[in-house]
Image 1 (spheres, helix red, strand yellow):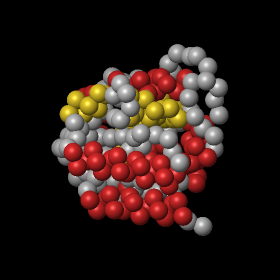
Image 2: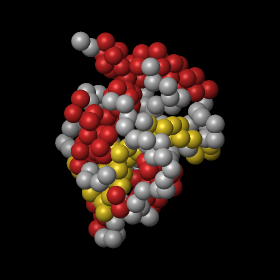
Image 3: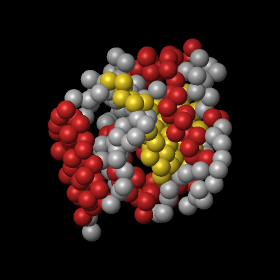
Image 4: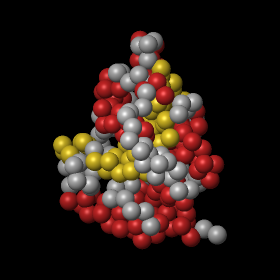
Length: 238
């Protein structure tokens, strides 16, 4: 969709950062402090049962210079459902999303946004040369990640080393071509989004990232199984 021409970064005022925050009251304060320097829009999506939305609302009231919105939903949307809800609410030319666990710093997200000057999308990757893992995953999680990546390549033909890193940015015009067709609401959402964009001829670059593993990861064994089944249904649906 885009020519590979030289260019600088993009204006932060033209960026929206979407953050799905499901029951994150125990660690959302740390994230709020980290993103308080962001000059663009920030959209939180809260679909849990704890006080996450109230904490975000209080922080927004105390920092009126920041553009913070908190979308609340009475029922669980899923990781993908939350991201899509936030993306649809965004009104800027560039839209990105990150996890609420703090594994990715704001500075890393800003680097990804800047890559949109010459690409339709930019995704953070923990498995390409130049990435920095300040706290590494255990052997089992690394093995599962590599196996999952092999499956993604086999089923969808996506030539990425890391589709599941929760740090991604996209041009609004690219997202508009695929969001209406997105069906995934779980953790397999990332794969479907990248697959749909590839089908549209969009150029999404994989960027090394500085990333810190969080022990409180919410991707359980049941989520992994649901992700696998969701991918199979997506790939072989008639």
